[in-house]
Length: 479
Image (tube, rainbow, N blue to C red; front, side):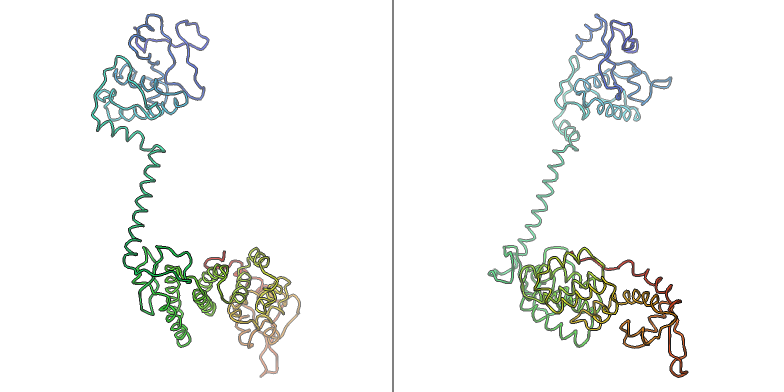
């Protein structure tokens, strides 16, 4: 029988009647060139039960990635076990997996050749590549190597480690372990609790609902990293006493850092115990008002978001007051889409409430550019609306000042500007103009000359001042 290197491969239209090409895709260079041997060679190949190997150029291409040159090792250097391994691989491979098989064989042989173990490697015992059919019988004439069950199972586990089935099994195992840990934590929590009957203060009551046993009125806020401990959670009666204490402390000291920490701790205790009642609404409303008073819009936004959900449950509270705050907040953030959604969701009776009418009046004044009406509403804002409008009144003052600079020439009295922009004193107006780099002219009433502002010179400064109001820096948004 001729060796592989002695076989000649001809063109698809060549003159050799003893050779023909196997069909293969043009984009995939086949490792085997589908040799049809002469009658004598074919009989020997069939007798031995192995497929004929390809030309050395095809095999060298698989190993080296290019066609053979003088430095490429000829296939004659391959041990018989490697040839049989390659033949078994192709026998077990489908046409769809041929390209993947060639890449895998290339990696396997290149890696073992780099370690100089091409001759000593046990190719007969090596599992076939993943691209092959997992159920493959060894070729005839090849001695079967007996393997231990441990090594066979280990190789099989390596072969299907990345399979979708194995991934799904690992995922289910991790989920089971996480669920068991969660159940253990809940069991430990419930073991320390005394049974408490269902009350109307808790929605969705179940066996996992905890009731605190802590009797301390003051407790700092700490973010939970595990299941809550009932011994560190205050029950509803203690929380009511705590809120009364915090109201008195705020009137006496006005220490916002302390009050905010205590109110957040109260909100946490209400949440972990699933307490959802009128008292919950009161806690969030008090925290929102104090946050507005101190211009902490980030904390106010969190309270407002929760209050919207609580009001939707039908719980009693100051719904119209916080609806007005919500509209003013949207005007501050310039969120036109949310303003339109809020207006569309209003009932006709909501628009008749005085505080809501005030907020809608502010919106109308800004939409029409009526700064005179806007500052009138700013001076008469009900409840905590004035604190909320303080956050964007300077922005609207710059806008109004631009219009005044275009409307009044050449000069305008400082007193008139202060009244138009809702300043309490001319000193406050002077400081505001100085921050915008707008000078005030005149020597004052002592010299008999009135304080004025050059409106033409002030216009570029007013336009430049609006750049810092292009973006609103705020923690979070109301959804």
